[in-house]
Length: 191
Image (cartoon, rainbow, N blue to C red; front, top):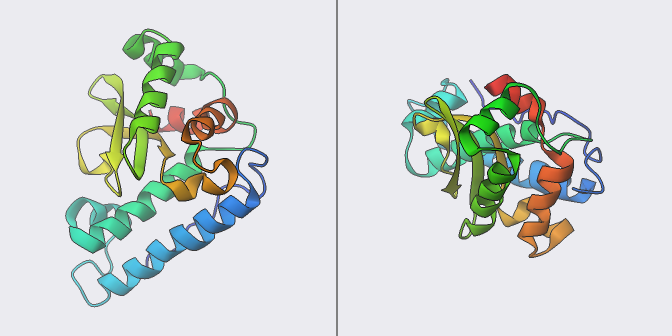
């Protein structure tokens, strides 16, 4: 089975002005696509050929893991954002945030802190860890998918996710993610 680049869940320009079509073209069309191309090269003729992406992420090491996890993380990220998203959550995620963090403001503070303090490249995640929600950050291609926590949503904090639109202002990008882009419907589905 060849690993394929999944379609975006919205048009390239649908997130503007918060994420420009140019950012999406580079992030999705160049970076995400490059991981897919490289992974297919790496797994050709190996035990991983024909396996699902999740299975590869959970069992591989080194370059195969890095490329597979980046594909999975990016695909998850595209669903974590949507046009006219953002703001406070509703539904089961809102209830779980209240129970786990004591309210949205405490949750937001924890997620922003994780996203802006991730040294170098990586990800900030809202996860279900046992019976409670938690915020975690992972470097590089690391992902909660390889552990026991269940990912609910993620913020990509690799520079290619925001540099065209926000330059070196990662905190401004994180605010735009939470205020204008986050897809709480996706998080509720995952919960």
